[in-house]
Image 1 (cartoon, rainbow, N blue to C red):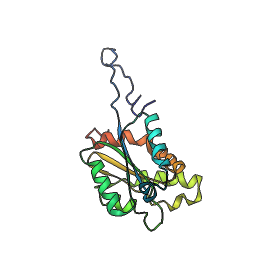
Image 2: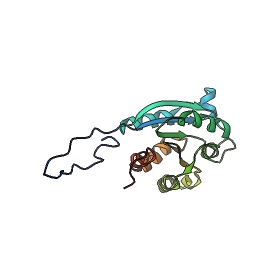
Image 3: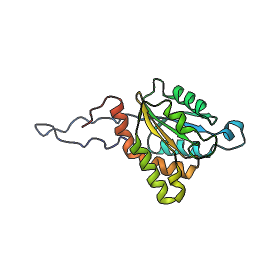
Image 4: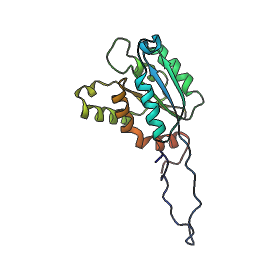
Length: 183
């Protein structure tokens, strides 16, 4: 079932008529792999491909998958390019650890206008429940314009676990960012 399938319950209108069916609005997403090794060709982009496949399976339309090197400036520049005029989800994979070039959160903070700490906390909670090192994640989530950015781990398993932790809330968050009614 897609991300917006079943979003609105079929309530009877006044007079007992069924409301007209509403086609689900597609949710767009972009994937950014942050890795010096993938850029250099010495590493395979396993997590980026895994995220793309999982998002498509969930019903998202993946419109771009980009790769950038580690580092604050490189990540910020890539995210600015990916979010400019974009309404949708942008997920990053990699650069959230304690390595000297793991600066994805810093690059993300340079771009976002508002943080979404609950999303990052949900990801850490699920990660910590499966791996004691999950508490070391420095992932950041936040909004810029109508785009929502979520930093995910560089391992494909961790990236999918964290994505799945926040997927239920993403359609509503994107609806709100697009000017939808909060309640």
